[in-house]
Image 1 (tube, rainbow, N blue to C red):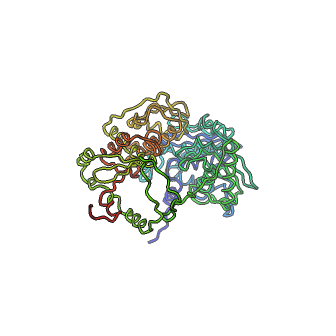
Image 2: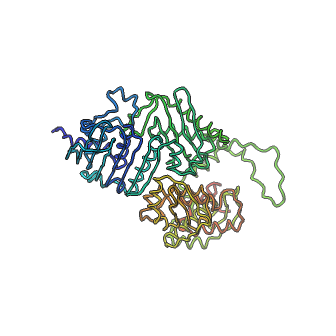
Image 3: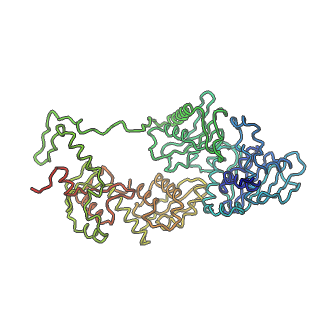
Length: 607
């Protein structure tokens, strides 16, 4: 049987699409305040917005009839016809925000237009109007939302921690403050000021929110082509981050996430920016309103462009020119390597065989006469599981592994290209990647210290200060106690700074600003994992930390090491319970056992 749903149920279903979390409420209310022409917007929160969200503005306000009408679905002052969807000038336009909010919360609306004698106060709970009065209030609008999802307990149960919900809100207010520097924004959480951004220029907002260090590093961007304009600021590559959370992109002042724009920015940096880094960017893009579609998703953060190629080229050139004006040489980024592997049959025999010294090992003869058959055979064999190449001892118990590693005779035969150690062991020929091996040894030492809760900590001779944004400050402040258990001591310093005071001693006695930035990004991106009691072997953030320090503390590919150092490295690696892969699963060594070697040379007998 088909029935017609009642209005309250319809609104609750709609609220599920529009209102996902407290940040959704803040987004819709603040966007309405901006559309109302406000120059001052204040957001007050309690418990990450789950208990209270209050948005106050000095915008145009509403009269009594408009206030009542705004509580119904699909009522809006932003558009009038379907054609208006293709030239939207406002942030909000769907007419679902207030109707959705009042259906899942307890809401008070105070509003007054400038020339009205009295304002309006309407109290709504679960979509039902409880009171409607004319009162004396200030011009503008104040909307108070209490106990979000109080009547939808399943939805409330799926909200994250207070810190996580607050992080989403803080980040969105940050974006709006950057998109509309002519508006004063204030964000207060649990009676503590989080963001204070007085109206001014974009650079002054960057300084207020991100701190003077990032503001000083900004390079202006300004490029116009016909009716397309790109303005804002970028930073030099040395200020890049591991995280992509510092890409602030706005289209017609609307915060967006768009791969075309992101790729164009990275292309503009060329080879000056490593592939695993992202610059700090604040860019606003203005294009004809009818060439951008914002009517893609209820969150309105996705957009589509009718002339993507034109936009890509303009952004890429704008970024490149700004960097070059700052004195940086930009070379085009290559998406794939130009050098292909040399095939076996491409080798040519040398015309002259070089002379060798009496004690020098002669090179192998030219492979030019070797047929493809052999090459094919070797490649085919290597397609087998790595277990085939490893000694059977790997598959015994951990106690026997320890016994095996101690009894193994290690004879270092040489080192290839200062990267790969060649050694003879009981089981055959061992090939070891010196960098991956040392990284695994350091990782295992750190994991063992965490398990025993006896981490060797090194206080930094000079604490490192890192500029961060408000949303990160909330997260890191919440993680301080947990991080101390992993050997990191951090201190909130001022409004926009984190001081890193100590690190695990296995990572050295001093770190650079660049490494400290990466640590903050790793902590922030793995916040949920750090809070939980997880076995250290399962913590991805520890692997990431070891990786960034390995580039500095571990023996690297290309480092010259002595025979005794190589022997010690292999010996310590073999003592580990799981020595065969680095923390990220890359092989540390391969043992070519006798069976495999005999197969290569087609020998199944000894002579």
